[in-house]
Length: 197
Ligand SMILES: Nc1ncnc2c1ncn2[C@@H]1O[C@H](COP(=O)(O)OP(=O)(O)OP(=O)(O)O)[C@@H](O)[C@H]1O
Ligand SMILES: Nc1nc2c(c(=O)[nH]1)N[C@H]1C(S)=C(S)[C@@H](COP(=O)(O)O)O[C@H]1N2
Image (cartoon, rainbow, N blue to C red; front, side, top):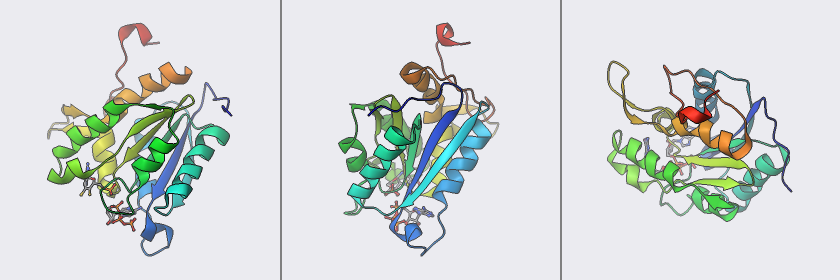
């Protein structure tokens, strides 16, 4: 079933995928990091729906399907479980429920992340479309959230490598006509001139 997506208020699903945080062994930092970065970057109306779940492929698949098909999220961001370890299955679950792939997001995240850690190539993160919604995997390290969304900047704040969020507003506009704006001091939204309002 395709949910009817709101054209005025951006709804974002935030999914933290962590065995230990979901068992209370440590406090989850994934959802707070995601939400605070998005609240500082997005200047148009936005609401969130959050989930904290273990690294279990059937639970991840069910959560992503629910957030898109029932909760009508335009965008779903996951954090955690993208590496090569046996229990890192987030990209596998995301691909299993995807309708189309958006390979540029994973490629750009790995480009950005190589400026921060040499192990960036160990993240199997993917971007996909399900129905009219975009789903993006981010790595599990809480600091990786800002790094991948915002990109690489020099000490004066000039962008050296664009973060992936720069391309998200135009992607959502093409997918479901919602017009999302961001604070250019944090993250400039790229759109061709003909698509600007
Ligand atoms: N939700 C989270 N909250 C706080 N720290 C986290 C979270 N997820 C991951 N981390 C930190 O980032 C590291 C790498 O994340 P990864 O997704 O590989 O987790 P992991 O080592 O499989 O462990 P777990 O799934 O139990 O969080 C973790 O070892 C942990 O230090
Ligand atoms: N920006 C950024 N990307 C990153 C990292 C990071 O600290 N910052 N950690 C890397 C490491 S060490 C791993 S193993 C992979 C997968 O991480 P995950 O299993 O936590 O998703 O992401 C990589 N990508």
